[in-house]
Length: 313
Image 1 (tube, one colour):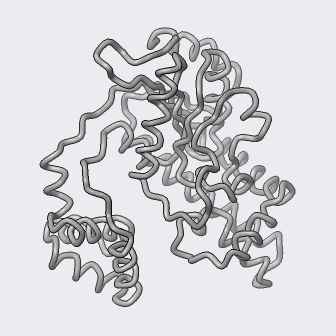
Image 2 (image 1 turned 90 degrees about the vertical axis):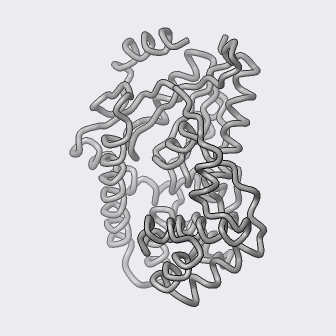
């Protein structure tokens, strides 16, 4: 049985890794063996319409062990890390209360970082402020928007690059909605980091690339084109996170007649390998304390992982 400690602290184990590292299979194996719940920490697997493109756990996987926060938001949702973190902490609390092991699994570094390190408290941002921010960004462009932000929040203007679109939007929204720069909110309410053990999969580049290429080709056979057609039929804004998922732009180009299917698949493979390279760099730089395995997940790792899990419980 797993529950909160006597001090009331949340308890969880994190399973992290880049795309096609086998982290979902590892999380499922842990959940099945240790009566756990797999809690999603992938920024795209939260969207309902993106099961195939994001390689979400299959219905069979979800039947083998409880899964949470997979496919819970419609693609029209402009999801944020704060929204996800609130939901994830609620799932961890519910899992702890039920005496089960919370297995947080994902490859979105910012989600994992802010889940562990915490977010400073900021009042909810009114929808009209969010809409004004995006309208201003569209009107002024990144450089102009950055200049406007710097006039309102000098610290954010100095810290952020004009290419940091989402972070600039967040800083602008906070200072406009509250009258207080985001940095002051953060200083007034310092986060309290959680000390959660982490398992990290970092397979060799060649092994990972082969898995990525095979997965991309398999996605087309599994219905990825239909998923993209469904998104396009909704007339969703290109600014929505779901529309920036790997594969949407590449397969949409084929659907719209801009390229043939082999070219679209090749573009998806290339984009995914580039994304995985950035993930690898982030994990190597940020997760120094993780129990790291330099291979894709396989059952041969389970004896060591069993020992690791038993020690932390």
